[in-house]
Amino acid sequence: MTHTATASTAAQTSAPKGKVVLAYSGGLDTSCLIPWLQEQGYEVVTAIAALGQPGSSDIDAIAQKAISLGAVASYAIDMREEFTEDVCACAIKANALYENKYPLLSALSRPVICKHMVDIAHKEGAVAIAHGCTGKGNDQVRFELECKALDPSLEILGPVRDWDLLTRSQEIEYCADHGIFIEVTKESPYSIDENVWGRAIECGVLENPWNEPPADAWVMTADPLEAPDQPVDIVISFEAGKPCALNGEKLGMLELITKLNHIAGEAGFGRIDMIEDRVIGIKSRECYEQPAALTLIKAHQALESLCLPGDVLNTKLELEHQWAKQVYSGLWYSPLKDALDAFFEATQKTVTGDVRLRLYKGSCTVIGTKSAHSMYDFGLATYDEGDTYDRTAAKGFMDLFGLPNKVWAQRSLEELAESADATDAFLHTPLVLSVEAAGAPAQVKSFS
View 1 (cartoon, rainbow, N blue to C red):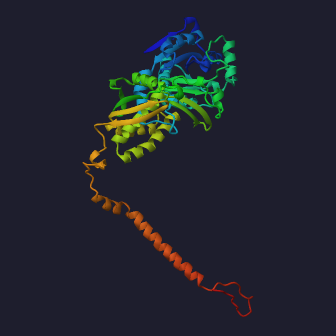
View 2 (cartoon, helix red, strand yellow):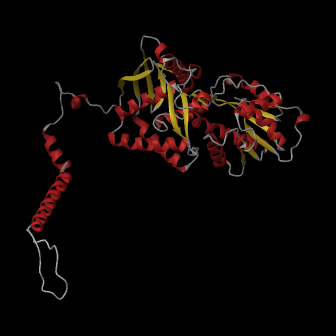
View 3 (cartoon, rainbow, N blue to C red):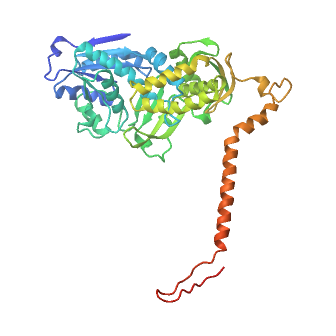
């Protein structure tokens, strides 16, 4: 549902540069941006996305805060269903893990936010879109590339790259000077991005890769050492590659992810601490909490192994890395990503079934899979009674499968033998050591 808060008529004075739609969270950077953009000559319209982050259930209050800071209109949009049903489900089918670790928490939310921001810009007649991303981060790339892909005519503003507030401490002081209330303090300067898919934590003591993340950095997951002593077994069901039930209960994606975050998080599973390669070329230390995301991808991979042929799995694995890199780099709306989506969708037709997993003190282990589309044939796999495998075919298979390698080996041995003969002949040929000067009788000194 979309809610719109509008300022008083007196506040809606036409600005010389026109309207700008600001991606607004109510946090540090974007709270500074409302007065700053006004000082630059813009009327500010804010867009607030509810994606399952803490406080998103009260997005109307965030919209009202934007109005109190001078925004002429503020749109508060609940994007959770759209995000989970369309975007997170797509990521699961792609087994999306950037650098084989990170399930693309922030990168997945930006396409949905950008789509709504462009829609608002069209509705409001805005000339530009603004974001609060820094010049060091990935999100500036995502906001700008994805908004431009949706409407190339819109100007994209990245004020945080341009203003003279160079540190988070300076931003906090700016807010204090302008009477802007924020929850971030100098004593706890983490930068947090959260949605239903998980939680990203950076800055502060985490900027030193040698420092262990402090206990207060983790919110969604229990300390594995303090997690319950009893394992928890769960069953996740899929239909055509999309999660559809948890422990036999049919659920939509939003409710399923929410419940799984709680179950897996209580068991201490879902923490990531990695050195990540950002789009702009620098390495960054990033911590993530994504219990549901990691559990669902692990379960989906296991079911695919049961239901898909080996050559499809191998090809898909290569393309999964391409998909994750595209989305991480802000190319959700791109021809290659669309083509990869079409390939993955084609592979998911038979990925229907159940996966049983065990969660225990920070681990998640697949302990069972079943599917009506299973390619596992007990008669072919068993070494016991009921074996239907034709062993007599094995020798012929090896003769033909290994034929190219056999021919190559034979040719290599022949060439080696010829080389050895040539070397032997060379060793038995007189070796010229010196020849007398021109004009003198030739005198060859040699040994054999």
